[in-house]
Amino acid sequence: MTWVLVIALALAVLMVLLFAFKIGPGPREAVAAAVLLGVAGYVTQGSPTLSGAPRQAAAPVASDPAALVEGRAKVTNSGIPTNNRWVVIADALARNGRYADAAEVLRGAINDDPHNADAWLALANALVAHADNRLTPPALLAYGRAIEAEPDAPGPRFFLGLAYAQEGRLVEARELWLDLVKSAPEDAPWRLPLARQLMRLDEALAGQSGESAAVQPPPPAS
Image (cartoon, rainbow, N blue to C red; front, side, top):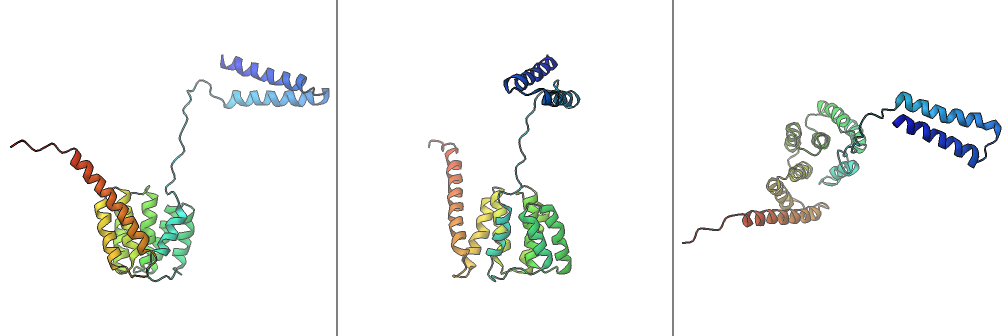
């Protein structure tokens, strides 16, 4: 029945083109050839016996890859952007969502300077984003190396807390961010936004505590 419908549809299209649009004798052969070519293409490529299975588009690895790179430059006490050529190249790749390629490039930066905290942090962020915002063991190791390389830098602890929060590990995220806010310089531009984020985190934890208390059985009567 499918082939009958295809042929009938082709003939209907051909009749409309020839009579409704009053195509002259000259172009009729070209129009007929085009319609027959379409039918032939369906015959060779179509699979009418297969059931339809619409597929959903794959979710992006990160909602805003550029914001991930820009955030690393903002959450800093130095205010000096990196000038390491490997990190610059990796940032360009990460802005386009090419996190795996960025991670490969960042390994070159780390080989050049194993104490480059910005390279370790960029690598950790790229690994988390490439893993669909999951904190994998290699990413956790990279965050730890970034903290070791520059203990006073806020970036590694901020993004590690963010990775914890994305996984639902809110208590661990709160511990990191609370220490970060307490030790932040008064004039740090990221201090107030982080404090507000910490307040939202406290509200989420309070909500979880309320839900847990609600499901607890009542104490036995004395």
